[in-house]
Amino acid sequence: MQQKPIPNADRTRTTRAALIAAARRLFIEQSYADTGTPQIVKEAGVTRGALYHHFEDKAALFEAVLDAEAEAIATVIEARTDTDMAALDALTIGGEAYLDAMMEPGRAHLLLVEGPAALGPERLASIHARHGDRTLADGLRHAQTQGHLSGVPAAALATLLSAMFDSAAVEVSGGASMKEHKDALRYVLGKVLSTG
Image 1 (cartoon, rainbow, N blue to C red):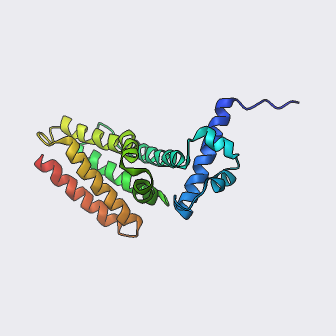
Image 2 (cartoon, helix red, strand yellow; image 1 turned 90 degrees about the vertical axis):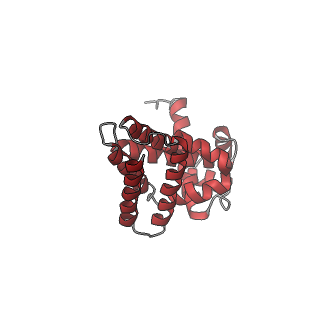
């Protein structure tokens, strides 16, 4: 019996996924700078031509790795929060979900250390806009619909809160107490919502 050929779309998805997974492993083990494309294609089990068919260069592949990481975090946040929650609960649970999701081995380092150094602020900002910034903006809009944060510049507040979440993720991924950071997170967000 003759085997059915794999549809192009499936083959494309499989190849992209293999490249992203291989690159992620190597970027965590060796760093972005110390990982070469020959290692990536070998690890992924694809040809060099396949790499350049899907990604313009190593930086584009790294951007795809970071995009997948950020999307995974947003998925965790969205799974734990909804618009039926009180604003404080939604923001706190979303923030805790972010910290939990950032504990995936290597994730905080990729997104918060390697990413800014390798891609620069503009490319990283576009990833954040699609995922992390979007979920935080949703949480702040939800708070506003419940009568909080009146007159507070939402974009500036989102920037400040995002920096706080990222710093906490770096600390906790480095071994600091998750419980203490979650307690502090709830305290800060409670103060923000009680005064806005």
